[in-house]
Image (tube, rainbow, N blue to C red; front, top):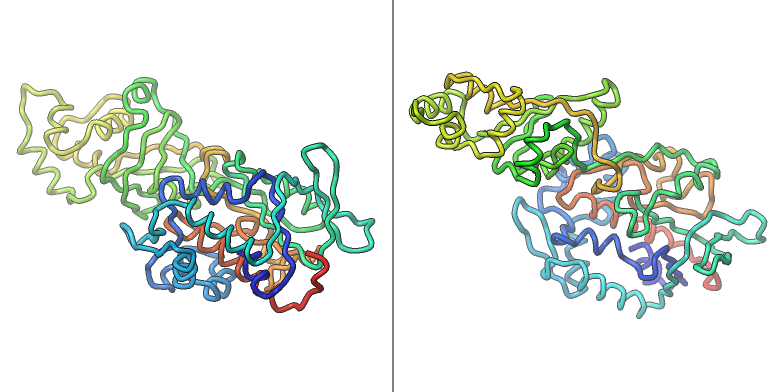
Length: 395
């Protein structure tokens, strides 16, 4: 995005990628449908960025959800609003959008060089220069008037963004907060019987509660804990609690559409003395995976009265020992601190060098907020460079 805006203004732009072809993480983001942004009111949208809203708000207002939708339509992918207000390109995929985007960039003169691993700066050169390692092992120096680092977070390292830039920037004197997994699953010590029977099972129409805040959805039982949207939504709070106290608590309401009293009455009405507890609970609307969690939470010693069973079904509680590892996270928290960059996102410790996207210290839930902020920061820096009137002899 930074390349597009700078090139549109007539700047000479060279885009170097660690992988052979660009946009691999973009393609990965669209694996289940490219959720570009969200259609909710902008003030509500901006609240999703939590404490970092103050830094991101002017950047996102400069290139917001409506702008992103217009941009996608200009590339032949008119957006549509899906469930829960999420916005997707017409094809629902990343590849057609990326192909159209690359064609536009090449038409505007952007040059692409793949298989360039960034090693840092060359302080001995007469002009600002970046060092890259080529597949042959040889190094290449690239002089620049301005450099934009868009190296991503370390989630999904197979696409090239592995977080190796953290130490390079720290050696340059840039303040970088440790990278941590975000929008990720949690680890819970399940028993072998639960894993054998229910691993991979979604818990349909439940509510996941952390510190009194409930998120509805369909979490999935994994071999190591729980995954899925309502779990990811709590990852920031769980991470902070685990860091402060060593563990956290997570509660699942298996029947969020029913009040406690209503569930008690339903259980009482559907009880059959000759049927097992599992059959009784199933006839009352609790799915097998939920029953498995109720057994897990009570060490297979389920209560036998309607009121006790209802209380348990409305609040099945487990201890969370940790978060899923970074390579299984959707995004990351941490990165270059906001005090380390100017309003233009130029590094104080490395003049003429800018950072964008997940390299900055912010996080957001899934739902279009991640990609929107990433592209907004790119647009922001591209706009800064477009107005600089740089020399055209150096990219």
